[in-house]
Length: 499
Ligand SMILES: [Zn+2]
Image 1: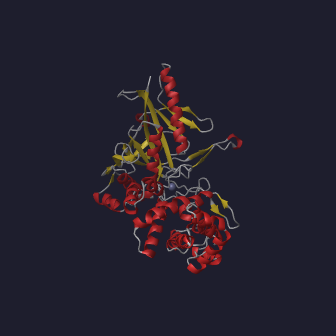
Image 2: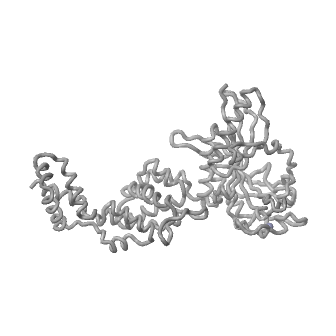
Image 3: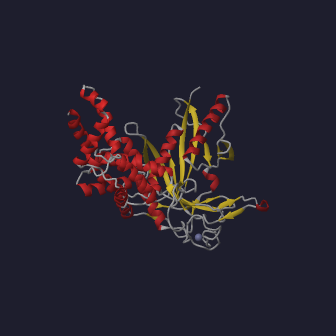
């Protein structure tokens, strides 16, 4: 029997606020355990939570980018459950009145684009972290993370394959990073995703029983976990069995999912409005202000790059895969435009080639070390922002190449040296005498020498064998150490060889 896969996704994005959701404690990652806590986030009796305004602004910004309606009336609720990393015995979340509602995100290329509907996105606080270190068989609790603001983003079950789910997740991550509301770092847990997946008979309108997947901290694991789950559920169903509604944990070592707990229903949590927090009213002015402050999103930049710089889809896609990379490309074009009075369309494709092929090739090798060689970039480093070659420097190099001062192959080797040493193109070219030879007298001298050394080939050429021209081009370029201006050599050589 053929089954159709149905996937929905919940994502938790940790918001990049300096302080926690309901108190002033720092949200910085990596501090010693329990050093970033206070009576509010420890859940002491008698304390009062205060809503973090920045977190609300970030939620509105995200909601607008996800095409959601922003709720004017918001309420925070208590979600009750017991766990050692939750000293209050409840998590403050949003239940009936989430801040963002009914939006959508588009995935896929132009022409095959598909909308994934966003059901809701709501604000909540994170729990602490249990550490099972095994020292004397003990477990410890670190409450630094308790109270960190999260935005939980929930889709409708609109995805039909693991590839679609990963495409959505990547798109969501891009948007969050572009908006500067979340760093999108999955390994550190600042973006966590929980796919829910079910199978149904192909053509059926009813949904099958769904299973929720947890413990996924990379796109790769997300795809592998969903693929495993499809195989497992297909086997159960085709053998006449039933799927149990449950939460399953992905085990990356074994490459399989295992039951974690039976799925809880909303009523298990005994939600009720938090009596310590008044309803939060969001005015149209607040929404308008957030809309004005929205940065340009990847999709808009992608389209603009094709129109403004005449880039093919592939280039626009690669260059907008990261905000800092898109900026690098655009700054490089602008710096050249200022120096040459050429337009974005004139400069776009060539600049794109140099950034995508040459610069990314160098960045891919790693970060250059002072004593030579490279070391891998760390998670905290952004290679595009910390590349030793900056847009201004690359632009200078490309302008020199365009003016014919240096040849293309020389420009490539100069770029590599700029990358490794941090020197400017002009410094390197001057120190090594790499300026392209365009002086006709000097070039003619070389050509005469090459012709004298190769009488046989010369006779062949003059006898009508025109393909020998390439041989002479090569010899002259070689004799000049790669510095001869090829256009000039071509011109002079044709004249000289004709005799
Ligand atoms: Zn606190």
